[in-house]
Length: 411
Image (cartoon, rainbow, N blue to C red; front, side, top):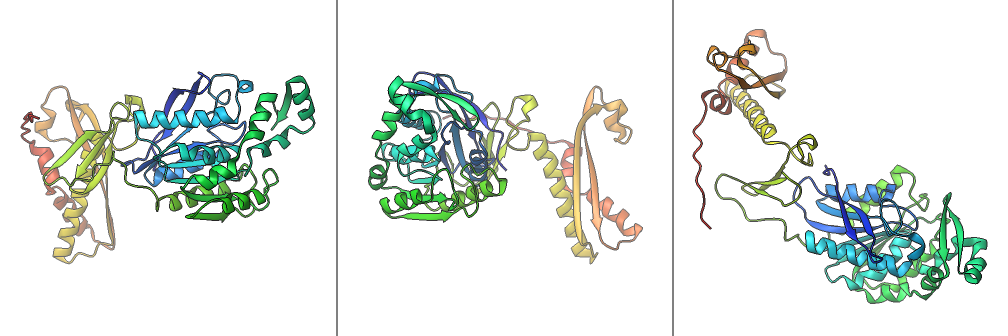
Protein backbone atom coordinates (compact mmCIF):
# COMPACT_ATOMS: atom_id res chain seq x y z
CA UNK A 1 0.00 0.00 0.00
CA UNK A 2 1.31 3.44 -0.88
CA UNK A 3 1.63 6.20 1.69
CA UNK A 4 -0.16 9.51 1.61
CA UNK A 5 1.98 11.55 -0.84
CA UNK A 6 4.20 14.36 0.33
CA UNK A 7 3.38 17.79 -1.06
CA UNK A 8 6.62 19.45 -2.11
CA UNK A 9 7.82 22.53 -3.97
CA UNK A 10 11.02 23.46 -5.78
CA UNK A 11 12.21 26.21 -8.08
CA UNK A 12 11.89 25.63 -11.83
CA UNK A 13 13.92 26.75 -14.82
CA UNK A 14 12.01 30.04 -15.13
CA UNK A 15 12.30 30.84 -11.42
CA UNK A 16 8.71 29.85 -10.62
CA UNK A 17 7.82 27.58 -7.72
CA UNK A 18 6.77 24.19 -9.07
CA UNK A 19 4.16 22.13 -7.24
CA UNK A 20 5.19 18.52 -6.73
CA UNK A 21 4.17 15.42 -4.83
CA UNK A 22 6.27 12.47 -3.80
CA UNK A 23 4.49 9.11 -3.56
CA UNK A 24 6.38 7.05 -1.00
CA UNK A 25 6.15 3.30 -0.38
CA UNK A 26 4.67 2.12 2.89
CA UNK A 27 7.90 0.22 3.51
CA UNK A 28 11.55 0.72 2.58
CA UNK A 29 12.37 2.82 -0.49
CA UNK A 30 14.09 0.66 -3.11
CA UNK A 31 14.69 3.52 -5.55
CA UNK A 32 13.36 6.90 -6.70
CA UNK A 33 11.63 7.69 -9.99
CA UNK A 34 10.66 10.91 -11.78
CA UNK A 35 7.46 11.26 -13.83
CA UNK A 36 6.92 13.86 -16.62
CA UNK A 37 3.30 14.53 -17.61
CA UNK A 38 1.85 15.16 -21.06
CA UNK A 39 1.60 18.51 -22.88
CA UNK A 40 -0.70 20.97 -20.99
CA UNK A 41 -1.63 18.17 -18.53
CA UNK A 42 -0.79 18.04 -14.83
CA UNK A 43 0.88 15.72 -12.35
CA UNK A 44 -2.55 14.44 -11.29
CA UNK A 45 -3.63 12.97 -14.63
CA UNK A 46 -4.84 9.33 -14.37
CA UNK A 47 -1.72 7.87 -16.01
CA UNK A 48 0.53 9.68 -13.52
CA UNK A 49 -1.56 8.65 -10.51
CA UNK A 50 -1.67 5.00 -11.52
CA UNK A 51 2.02 4.77 -12.37
CA UNK A 52 2.99 6.43 -9.08
CA UNK A 53 0.68 4.12 -7.13
CA UNK A 54 1.90 0.95 -8.82
CA UNK A 55 5.56 1.84 -8.42
CA UNK A 56 5.16 2.85 -4.77
CA UNK A 57 3.58 -0.55 -4.08
CA UNK A 58 6.78 -2.05 -5.50
CA UNK A 59 8.93 0.03 -3.16
CA UNK A 60 9.75 2.80 -5.66
CA UNK A 61 9.15 6.42 -4.63
CA UNK A 62 7.82 8.61 -7.46
CA UNK A 63 8.16 12.38 -7.79
CA UNK A 64 5.64 14.01 -10.14
CA UNK A 65 5.31 17.73 -10.61
CA UNK A 66 3.54 20.36 -12.69
CA UNK A 67 5.67 22.06 -15.31
CA UNK A 68 5.93 25.85 -15.17
CA UNK A 69 2.56 27.55 -15.62
CA UNK A 70 0.52 24.35 -15.34
CA UNK A 71 -1.53 22.75 -12.56
CA UNK A 72 -0.50 24.04 -9.16
CA UNK A 73 2.83 25.49 -10.34
CA UNK A 74 3.58 29.16 -10.67
CA UNK A 75 4.97 30.98 -13.66
CA UNK A 76 3.67 31.79 -17.12
CA UNK A 77 3.06 28.86 -19.48
CA UNK A 78 3.47 31.19 -22.46
CA UNK A 79 7.09 31.85 -21.47
CA UNK A 80 8.00 28.16 -21.49
CA UNK A 81 9.13 25.77 -24.21
CA UNK A 82 10.34 22.21 -24.61
CA UNK A 83 13.85 23.16 -23.51
CA UNK A 84 12.56 24.79 -20.31
CA UNK A 85 10.55 21.62 -19.56
CA UNK A 86 13.76 19.62 -19.91
CA UNK A 87 15.46 22.05 -17.52
CA UNK A 88 12.55 21.64 -15.08
CA UNK A 89 13.18 17.88 -15.16
CA UNK A 90 16.87 18.39 -14.43
CA UNK A 91 16.00 20.62 -11.49
CA UNK A 92 13.50 18.02 -10.24
CA UNK A 93 16.26 15.40 -10.37
CA UNK A 94 18.56 17.81 -8.51
CA UNK A 95 15.87 18.31 -5.87
CA UNK A 96 15.58 14.56 -5.35
CA UNK A 97 19.36 14.17 -5.25
CA UNK A 98 19.77 16.92 -2.64
CA UNK A 99 16.83 15.99 -0.42
CA UNK A 100 16.31 12.25 -0.92
CA UNK A 101 18.18 10.36 -3.64
CA UNK A 102 18.65 10.91 -7.37
CA UNK A 103 16.13 9.16 -9.65
CA UNK A 104 17.12 5.86 -11.26
CA UNK A 105 13.95 5.68 -13.35
CA UNK A 106 12.33 8.28 -15.64
CA UNK A 107 8.76 7.93 -16.93
CA UNK A 108 7.27 10.30 -19.48
CA UNK A 109 3.79 10.54 -20.96
CA UNK A 110 3.27 12.03 -24.45
CA UNK A 111 5.48 15.15 -24.80
CA UNK A 112 6.74 14.33 -21.31
CA UNK A 113 8.03 11.11 -22.85
CA UNK A 114 10.03 13.07 -25.41
CA UNK A 115 11.33 15.24 -22.56
CA UNK A 116 12.61 12.30 -20.48
CA UNK A 117 14.27 10.84 -23.58
CA UNK A 118 16.01 14.18 -24.11
CA UNK A 119 17.16 14.53 -20.50
CA UNK A 120 18.04 10.93 -19.58
CA UNK A 121 21.66 11.22 -20.70
CA UNK A 122 22.16 14.29 -18.50
CA UNK A 123 21.18 12.57 -15.26
CA UNK A 124 23.99 10.10 -14.49
CA UNK A 125 22.04 8.07 -11.92
CA UNK A 126 19.24 7.18 -14.37
CA UNK A 127 19.32 3.49 -15.29
CA UNK A 128 15.97 3.06 -17.08
CA UNK A 129 13.48 5.15 -19.07
CA UNK A 130 9.82 4.35 -19.85
CA UNK A 131 7.67 6.32 -22.29
CA UNK A 132 3.89 6.27 -22.76
CA UNK A 133 2.51 7.48 -26.10
CA UNK A 134 5.60 9.58 -26.73
CA UNK A 135 6.33 11.37 -30.03
CA UNK A 136 9.65 10.57 -31.69
CA UNK A 137 10.02 14.23 -32.62
CA UNK A 138 9.14 17.03 -30.19
CA UNK A 139 7.88 19.07 -33.14
CA UNK A 140 5.06 16.55 -33.52
CA UNK A 141 3.04 18.53 -30.99
CA UNK A 142 2.80 21.44 -33.43
CA UNK A 143 -0.04 19.76 -35.30
CA UNK A 144 -2.21 20.52 -32.23
CA UNK A 145 -2.04 24.20 -33.13
CA UNK A 146 -4.00 23.67 -36.39
CA UNK A 147 -4.89 26.93 -38.09
CA UNK A 148 -3.15 29.05 -35.49
CA UNK A 149 0.34 28.16 -36.68
CA UNK A 150 0.49 30.88 -39.34
CA UNK A 151 -0.66 33.50 -36.87
CA UNK A 152 1.92 32.31 -34.35
CA UNK A 153 4.70 32.69 -36.92
CA UNK A 154 3.49 36.04 -38.22
CA UNK A 155 2.26 37.76 -35.05
CA UNK A 156 4.69 36.09 -32.64
CA UNK A 157 1.98 34.43 -30.59
CA UNK A 158 -1.62 33.22 -30.67
CA UNK A 159 -4.31 31.80 -28.43
CA UNK A 160 -4.71 28.06 -29.05
CA UNK A 161 -7.53 25.86 -27.77
CA UNK A 162 -6.12 22.62 -26.35
CA UNK A 163 -8.43 20.15 -24.67
CA UNK A 164 -11.08 22.80 -24.07
CA UNK A 165 -8.63 25.26 -22.50
CA UNK A 166 -6.99 28.31 -24.04
CA UNK A 167 -3.21 28.65 -24.02
CA UNK A 168 -0.95 31.36 -25.41
CA UNK A 169 1.62 29.78 -27.72
CA UNK A 170 4.57 31.90 -28.81
CA UNK A 171 6.79 31.61 -31.86
CA UNK A 172 9.76 30.81 -29.60
CA UNK A 173 7.87 27.73 -28.40
CA UNK A 174 7.34 26.49 -31.96
CA UNK A 175 10.92 27.23 -33.00
CA UNK A 176 12.25 25.37 -29.97
CA UNK A 177 10.10 22.31 -30.71
CA UNK A 178 11.30 22.20 -34.31
CA UNK A 179 14.93 22.42 -33.23
CA UNK A 180 14.80 19.32 -31.01
CA UNK A 181 16.51 16.09 -32.05
CA UNK A 182 14.83 13.52 -29.81
CA UNK A 183 15.82 10.48 -31.88
CA UNK A 184 19.48 11.45 -31.71
CA UNK A 185 19.15 11.76 -27.93
CA UNK A 186 17.57 8.29 -27.83
CA UNK A 187 20.48 6.79 -29.76
CA UNK A 188 22.97 8.38 -27.38
CA UNK A 189 21.32 7.91 -23.99
CA UNK A 190 22.62 4.36 -23.21
CA UNK A 191 19.80 3.52 -20.80
CA UNK A 192 17.33 0.63 -20.67
CA UNK A 193 14.19 1.68 -22.54
CA UNK A 194 10.55 0.61 -22.38
CA UNK A 195 8.23 2.03 -25.05
CA UNK A 196 4.48 1.78 -24.36
CA UNK A 197 2.11 2.90 -27.10
CA UNK A 198 -1.46 2.31 -28.19
CA UNK A 199 -1.82 1.16 -31.85
CA UNK A 200 -5.04 3.20 -32.10
CA UNK A 201 -3.55 6.38 -30.62
CA UNK A 202 -4.98 9.18 -32.79
CA UNK A 203 -2.97 11.96 -31.13
CA UNK A 204 0.50 10.47 -31.46
CA UNK A 205 0.55 7.70 -34.06
CA UNK A 206 2.12 4.36 -33.24
CA UNK A 207 4.77 4.97 -35.92
CA UNK A 208 6.40 7.28 -33.36
CA UNK A 209 6.95 4.27 -31.09
CA UNK A 210 8.59 2.46 -34.01
CA UNK A 211 10.95 5.39 -34.62
CA UNK A 212 11.94 5.57 -30.94
CA UNK A 213 12.40 1.82 -30.65
CA UNK A 214 14.57 1.60 -33.77
CA UNK A 215 16.71 4.55 -32.68
CA UNK A 216 17.40 3.08 -29.24
CA UNK A 217 20.15 0.66 -28.33
CA UNK A 218 19.53 -2.50 -26.35
CA UNK A 219 18.23 -3.25 -23.80
CA UNK A 220 14.89 -2.05 -25.15
CA UNK A 221 11.32 -3.35 -25.00
CA UNK A 222 7.96 -2.48 -26.55
CA UNK A 223 4.51 -3.00 -25.05
CA UNK A 224 1.30 -2.45 -26.98
CA UNK A 225 -1.47 -0.73 -25.01
CA UNK A 226 -4.10 -2.37 -27.21
CA UNK A 227 -7.24 -0.20 -27.37
CA UNK A 228 -6.13 2.56 -25.01
CA UNK A 229 -6.48 6.21 -26.01
CA UNK A 230 -3.65 8.71 -25.87
CA UNK A 231 -4.41 9.99 -22.36
CA UNK A 232 -5.17 6.52 -20.94
CA UNK A 233 -8.53 7.84 -19.77
CA UNK A 234 -9.83 4.33 -19.05
CA UNK A 235 -8.77 3.32 -15.56
CA UNK A 236 -7.94 -0.23 -16.66
CA UNK A 237 -5.56 1.01 -19.38
CA UNK A 238 -3.70 3.32 -17.02
CA UNK A 239 -3.51 0.61 -14.35
CA UNK A 240 -2.17 -1.92 -16.87
CA UNK A 241 0.55 0.44 -18.08
CA UNK A 242 1.51 1.15 -14.48
CA UNK A 243 1.82 -2.56 -13.60
CA UNK A 244 3.97 -3.24 -16.67
CA UNK A 245 6.34 -0.36 -15.89
CA UNK A 246 6.66 -1.44 -12.26
CA UNK A 247 7.49 -5.05 -13.22
CA UNK A 248 9.89 -4.06 -16.01
CA UNK A 249 11.78 -1.45 -13.98
CA UNK A 250 12.54 -3.85 -11.14
CA UNK A 251 15.11 -5.61 -13.33
CA UNK A 252 17.24 -2.50 -13.82
CA UNK A 253 17.22 -0.63 -10.52
CA UNK A 254 19.86 -0.96 -7.85
CA UNK A 255 19.00 -0.93 -4.17
CA UNK A 256 18.62 2.51 -2.67
CA UNK A 257 21.33 3.66 -0.29
CA UNK A 258 18.48 4.69 2.01
CA UNK A 259 17.48 1.07 2.57
CA UNK A 260 19.29 -0.36 5.56
CA UNK A 261 19.92 -4.04 4.88
CA UNK A 262 22.07 -4.90 7.92
CA UNK A 263 20.33 -7.55 9.97
CA UNK A 264 19.56 -6.59 13.56
CA UNK A 265 20.97 -9.42 15.65
CA UNK A 266 19.19 -8.69 18.93
CA UNK A 267 15.94 -7.00 19.80
CA UNK A 268 14.05 -4.45 17.76
CA UNK A 269 15.59 -1.30 16.34
CA UNK A 270 13.55 1.73 15.28
CA UNK A 271 15.05 4.71 13.46
CA UNK A 272 13.58 7.81 11.85
CA UNK A 273 13.39 7.67 8.06
CA UNK A 274 13.83 11.43 7.74
CA UNK A 275 10.50 11.68 5.92
CA UNK A 276 7.83 13.60 7.73
CA UNK A 277 7.52 14.17 11.46
CA UNK A 278 7.05 10.64 12.82
CA UNK A 279 7.72 8.03 10.12
CA UNK A 280 10.20 5.44 11.39
CA UNK A 281 11.74 2.23 10.10
CA UNK A 282 11.26 -0.79 12.36
CA UNK A 283 13.98 -3.42 11.99
CA UNK A 284 13.49 -6.89 13.47
CA UNK A 285 16.16 -9.30 12.28
CA UNK A 286 15.94 -9.09 8.48
CA UNK A 287 12.34 -7.83 8.56
CA UNK A 288 11.52 -4.19 7.80
CA UNK A 289 8.30 -2.41 8.80
CA UNK A 290 7.11 1.19 8.94
CA UNK A 291 5.71 2.91 12.03
CA UNK A 292 3.92 6.24 11.83
CA UNK A 293 1.11 8.31 13.27
CA UNK A 294 -2.25 9.20 11.67
CA UNK A 295 -2.55 12.41 9.67
CA UNK A 296 -4.64 13.90 12.50
CA UNK A 297 -1.53 13.72 14.71
CA UNK A 298 0.79 15.17 12.07
CA UNK A 299 1.96 11.90 10.53
CA UNK A 300 1.58 10.43 7.03
CA UNK A 301 -0.55 7.47 8.18
CA UNK A 302 2.01 5.39 6.27
CA UNK A 303 2.18 2.61 8.84
CA UNK A 304 0.72 1.39 12.13
CA UNK A 305 1.13 3.57 15.21
CA UNK A 306 3.08 2.35 18.27
CA UNK A 307 -0.20 1.40 20.00
CA UNK A 308 -1.30 -0.38 16.82
CA UNK A 309 1.85 -2.48 17.03
CA UNK A 310 1.17 -3.16 20.71
CA UNK A 311 -2.37 -4.26 19.85
CA UNK A 312 -0.98 -6.40 17.03
CA UNK A 313 1.42 -8.07 19.43
CA UNK A 314 -1.45 -8.99 21.75
CA UNK A 315 -3.61 -10.24 18.88
CA UNK A 316 -0.79 -12.28 17.30
CA UNK A 317 0.24 -13.79 20.60
CA UNK A 318 -3.39 -14.74 21.32
CA UNK A 319 -3.82 -16.48 17.96
CA UNK A 320 -0.52 -18.37 18.30
CA UNK A 321 -1.24 -19.43 21.89
CA UNK A 322 -4.68 -20.75 20.96
CA UNK A 323 -3.29 -22.63 17.93
CA UNK A 324 -0.60 -24.28 20.06
CA UNK A 325 -3.24 -25.36 22.61
CA UNK A 326 -5.63 -26.64 19.93
CA UNK A 327 -2.91 -28.69 18.24
CA UNK A 328 -1.64 -30.10 21.52
CA UNK A 329 -5.14 -31.09 22.72
CA UNK A 330 -6.39 -32.29 19.35
CA UNK A 331 -9.07 -29.60 19.13
CA UNK A 332 -10.20 -29.10 15.55
CA UNK A 333 -10.30 -25.35 14.84
CA UNK A 334 -10.42 -24.34 11.19
CA UNK A 335 -9.27 -20.78 11.74
CA UNK A 336 -8.50 -18.54 14.68
CA UNK A 337 -8.87 -14.78 14.42
CA UNK A 338 -8.40 -12.07 17.04
CA UNK A 339 -9.29 -8.40 16.74
CA UNK A 340 -7.97 -5.99 19.37
CA UNK A 341 -9.50 -2.61 20.15
CA UNK A 342 -7.45 -0.15 22.20
CA UNK A 343 -8.58 2.97 23.99
CA UNK A 344 -8.03 5.03 27.11
CA UNK A 345 -10.89 5.09 29.61
CA UNK A 346 -11.42 6.38 33.13
CA UNK A 347 -10.48 3.59 35.52
CA UNK A 348 -13.70 3.94 37.51
CA UNK A 349 -15.76 3.51 34.35
CA UNK A 350 -14.02 0.32 33.24
CA UNK A 351 -16.66 -2.11 34.53
CA UNK A 352 -15.09 -5.19 32.95
CA UNK A 353 -11.58 -4.37 34.18
CA UNK A 354 -10.02 -6.00 37.24
CA UNK A 355 -10.65 -4.52 40.70
CA UNK A 356 -6.99 -3.51 40.86
CA UNK A 357 -7.34 -1.59 37.58
CA UNK A 358 -10.59 0.08 38.67
CA UNK A 359 -8.89 1.29 41.84
CA UNK A 360 -6.43 3.40 39.88
CA UNK A 361 -6.92 7.12 39.41
CA UNK A 362 -7.25 8.83 36.04
CA UNK A 363 -7.37 7.02 32.74
CA UNK A 364 -6.08 3.53 31.98
CA UNK A 365 -5.34 1.67 28.76
CA UNK A 366 -8.06 -0.80 27.84
CA UNK A 367 -7.45 -3.58 25.30
CA UNK A 368 -10.52 -5.49 24.18
CA UNK A 369 -10.02 -8.81 22.39
CA UNK A 370 -12.66 -10.15 20.02
CA UNK A 371 -11.80 -13.78 19.30
CA UNK A 372 -13.33 -15.79 16.47
CA UNK A 373 -13.01 -19.61 16.48
CA UNK A 374 -14.15 -21.18 13.22
CA UNK A 375 -15.12 -24.81 13.61
CA UNK A 376 -17.62 -27.21 15.17
CA UNK A 377 -16.77 -26.54 18.83
CA UNK A 378 -19.05 -27.11 21.81
CA UNK A 379 -19.57 -24.42 24.41
CA UNK A 380 -17.31 -26.12 26.96
CA UNK A 381 -14.41 -26.18 24.48
CA UNK A 382 -14.99 -22.57 23.47
CA UNK A 383 -15.00 -21.48 27.14
CA UNK A 384 -11.73 -23.37 27.73
CA UNK A 385 -10.15 -21.71 24.67
CA UNK A 386 -11.04 -18.28 26.08
CA UNK A 387 -9.34 -19.24 29.36
CA UNK A 388 -6.23 -20.25 27.43
CA UNK A 389 -6.25 -16.88 25.64
CA UNK A 390 -5.58 -15.25 29.01
CA UNK A 391 -2.38 -17.29 29.26
CA UNK A 392 -0.92 -15.59 26.20
CA UNK A 393 2.54 -14.25 27.26
CA UNK A 394 1.89 -10.75 25.89
CA UNK A 395 -1.43 -10.67 27.75
CA UNK A 396 0.35 -11.57 30.96
CA UNK A 397 3.01 -8.92 30.36
CA UNK A 398 0.40 -6.23 29.83
CA UNK A 399 -1.52 -7.21 32.97
CA UNK A 400 1.54 -7.56 35.18
CA UNK A 401 3.44 -4.59 33.87
CA UNK A 402 7.08 -4.65 32.87
CA UNK A 403 10.35 -3.04 33.87
CA UNK A 404 11.71 -0.65 31.23
CA UNK A 405 15.41 0.15 31.65
CA UNK A 406 16.74 3.05 29.59
CA UNK A 407 20.40 3.64 28.70
CA UNK A 408 22.08 6.13 26.38
CA UNK A 409 24.53 4.64 23.91
CA UNK A 410 27.69 6.64 23.39
CA UNK A 411 28.75 7.13 19.76
